Image (cartoon, rainbow, N blue to C red; front, side, top):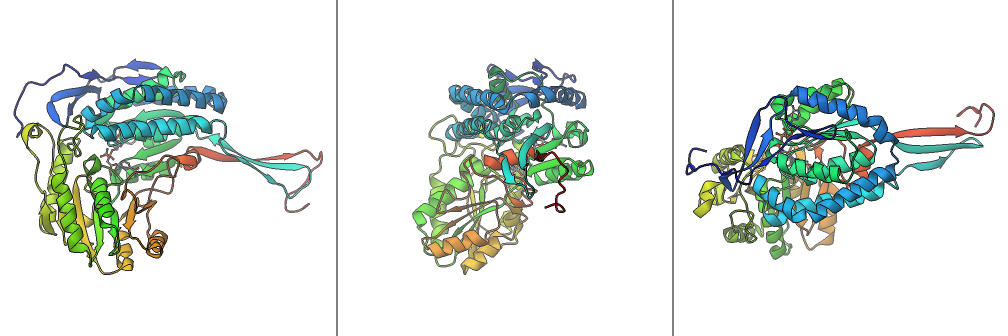
Length: 506
Ligand code: NAD
């Protein structure tokens, strides 16, 4: 970054990350690496990461393919025991992993602990699923015949993850995929490869057999479309941007592969005139500026009833003023840096657009106080009087930028909420049960909060995902996660000893 004070790079705590293929930690065949800097202090190198190519990916696919039969033949409760044990290892190492995460991608330490906790929760949940993997028996229309539906693994899953939840998102994908009997090629973001490697190590230490989980670190560009079209990849589980999600669906669709996409968001909080405004303002601030706005579920629009609009703007601005910005390792920090330079540039780009689309109430510039001058910090920003169809009210910014939209009624608020290309999360603050339930009924998002945390705070035992541009109909987490990573197999067992014809002899 040109505007930073130029200092020597500090490699003293840098971690060298390798690929994990067929049970071994190996460098990329390319020999190329990428130096991941701490976004709160860009002179500190956190990890040195392999930049792999398609040859590395092919090796990982081969290993996952070869391990398939052995893993599918391992009883599900045994598979699940390994996942449960990995959860225990993550629990033991929670603090260490959280600190690494804060250094690697900037989120504040408390939220980094939450990220690891989400993976632990998922491990313990999926550890239990090994003894369920729900199937069912239903009666047959014929005598002496059973009808049973069971879950089959899909095969080799390509799990492709972004950088904003470096341990939680891999856990959402990989734990249910493994318990359901799939083997995995894991392609994490190069920005959080050290966290990804630590996640894999927990499974390795828990006793996962070689080849079952393979990790290759590569940029999207170097992957090309290989993971979306290779004949030995049976399913693609992708979390990231809409553009890459569409590419995955298009290419994989041509090859009849199952694709699960978890993409962007443009989430809103509706504040009605009867809302508890103390609660609403807390929920808005937490949802909009937690993880520096870099959550797929982050609130980036508030849709406020005209009777309380001015008061809400004033109170949110006041709360923003009190937010403590800084290095996430400081337990007092509430807003950390953006994760890397391109994120900062993207936020700056949208704020420039926003200056012509609304009234800048607070923020709108880089934050360079003290040591923050050496990182990718940006002041939490609020625009008021934004039209619902403005660019900053429609496109995902993925940073600490909030737009306020004024409405006259609940119906108008719901219409504005539903008017974006994404449909991940929404929240409403109202004291009126009828308004709350009416909103829940008509809001078109995969997740909906009433008087809660705003738009963030999903728990792992419920389905997670969204509609329209956010996803293609599949869900992560809970039982829905098992559903996504398995296929139904219907089994008919006739013990009558004669030919009984369905629909005819019944
Ligand atoms: P991105 O699409 O740029 O990258 C996501 C991942 O895909 C990275 O690992 C990247 O290297 C990889 N990738 C890109 N092209 C690829 C290709 N051709 N083949 C294989 N892998 C490829 O997204 P990002 O910037 O890392 O993440 C931010 C986006 O993720 C935001 O839009 C955010 O809303 C979304 N997100 C969604 C959810 C959700 O559950 N809905 C959760 C977190 C983040």
